[in-house]
Length: 390
Image (cartoon, rainbow, N blue to C red; front, side, top):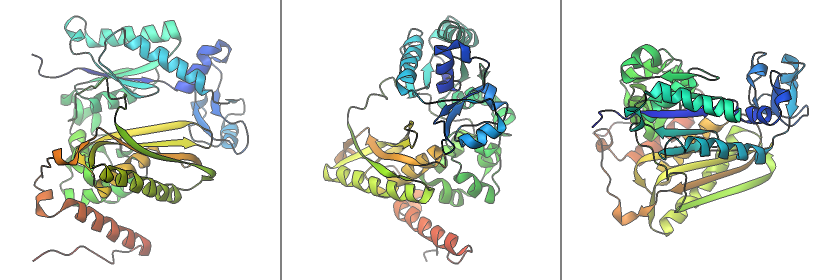
């Protein structure tokens, strides 16, 4: 039996733009962006030709045109992107049935068994070549012993990269990377981490004050530290995308939400309704998801699996906040949604405390920490600190 699993993370490069190029070869080698072609429009993505001029996703069209006057702005076509997404998944499922979709344009594959017959890099080259030559879809592939390292590896070389990231390479290849490059760390959290001296992934891996860290990373603190040290789940669940039992609430905002604070306040209300329904049905969740649709009608979502099942508002919203932090792009939002899945009856929940939680109730501690933090931030000085029980 193999000691380590071998996982692929396959990421379609500049997916929306690549779909447009695949459908219309005349667009190749031209700078293109996807979005509404108006001065107030926002780009969803840009191809790599445009990126050479400094054009980025979430950039206003007006600014993008200043950087690249020849930029071709193409309105989004979700039906087209969905069709190419199906081509992508149909293709990789011919390699193995151990495929877990992560979004419309990325997936995890467990190729452990296949690696007994073909070297993982050779297999990755075959997959990449098939998608690019047959379907004109460029992908980057990360290879690692767990999901996190495979995901980080796929981000290291784009477009058309293949990168292997082993646990023994973590200190050399992973630790020097800026903390904002770590998968799961949202842009809002980065300044807070830098404030306490965490500037690289290595700084996070070696950070000793876990209670201080929990003020910013919440219930996911230990999971992030473990990932920074190269640990992570090696489990690929092909059925994870199939939402069989779930509870969700979403709301469409005709007058778009424009700022982070109003979006987060809206998510608080949605989370409250979801948790109320959870408790009314006497259920607990282990999976939390956030859905977002931009003013350009581009939909994005993200999910996280919790350490254990819960029906606590604080725990669920803590996950929602971190997911939203990762999705947030500083542009108007048309729809927000919160969902929970992997549900079981509350009577079946068995909660194990770790050494840090055993000192005092975690939910109460996190709630108080957030309250004190918000007060101190409001006055821009450390007025309040949590006392110590005697």
